[in-house]
Length: 136
Image 1 (cartoon, rainbow, N blue to C red):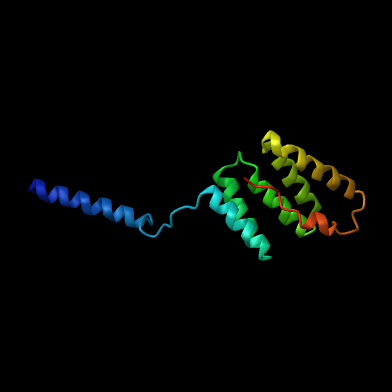
Image 2: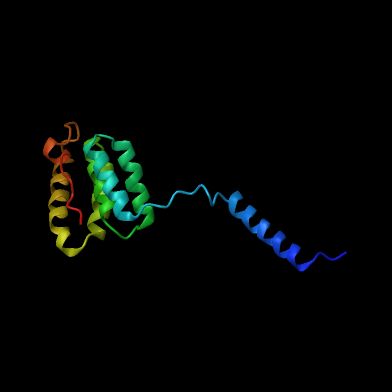
């Protein structure tokens, strides 16, 4: 027995809505923009919430891996956590992605960080730990 055309359309509509709901379509939060994630990460750094800031910067880096800001934030977090290797890696990545007008100040930091690596037992200087890269 064939179903009437109206019932078939209704069945497909119900199926489509069900699939949408099962995939979580109703519960998804709108994704934050890169700029919003960077802004949230910087605010979390100011509040001392470094782990949360790192998570936001990681999200920003995944959203747009060709921009330097998220890696600059990772650098700040690594310095504040006295993670020299993490700071070195994040700063190198930020420099490689930074626009020409930002590279100079980042490269100065890189030289200071390299000079400090010779004294690995001493914590990173407070001036370096307070650095926040200029973000657009």
